[in-house]
Amino acid sequence: MSDVSAASPATSVAATSAAVPPMVLAEQVSKSFGSNEVLKSISLSVAKGEVMCLVGPSGSGKSTFLRCINHLEVVNGGRLFVDGELVGYTQKGDTLYELQPKQAAAQRREIGMVFQKFNLFPHMTALENVIEAPIHVKKQPKALAIARGKELLDRVGLTDRMGHYPAHLSGGQQQRVAIARALAMDPKLMLFDEPTSALDPELVGEVLDVMKGLAQSGMTMIVVTHEMGFAREVADSLVFMDGGVVVETGVPREIIANPQHARTKAFLSKVL
Image: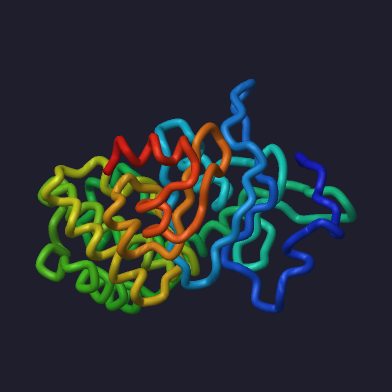
């Protein structure tokens, strides 16, 4: 069982936070792949119901940070909490011990993630893709899972595509099925890793509209994106990352209109 040093309880933000913890709390999170330090002591928090957009150049650590939140990547230092619960580890004394795979998977079920690629099962219809995990992972009765799956596909505007296979759906429709599939597990947090980057430009809007609806419903979301219009309109906070560090964070409209850091200005000048 692997272990890493735990932060001192005296310096733990989580230990001193109010009764209602943030949905996501990162304390000096670091991650390396070999000699490549991808995340360098990232500290930030996301309140319940907040929409945070992460922006920055390729290789800045945004996607890696998302993957650390649901323990798809194991952090090398620091700690991550989701809804007050330590992610991927259990603490004994001053030492963190990595959870067993089944325990980590149980945590991961409460965190929905939508990737750049849709990753749908090609041999299953849209509805079958959505109900697969609730039936086999959450052990939901099939009738209940089907009713919920239909409700979610209707929510993402795919009432008339429930019986279609992925090969007969557009990229935007496939991504909306992927969102419905993630929502079917009733997550407390949704992570989006550049969900529109693989789409043709004319299909981007239909996916962003679904995400806007989720934000309006109060879903806590962290979105890695280059869609600055979405960030300006929908996000509560904007984080600019570069070189594995948080360079600038604040209200999206203010950062986009008047970035304070030269690196942020240079980036925005290329994407706006």
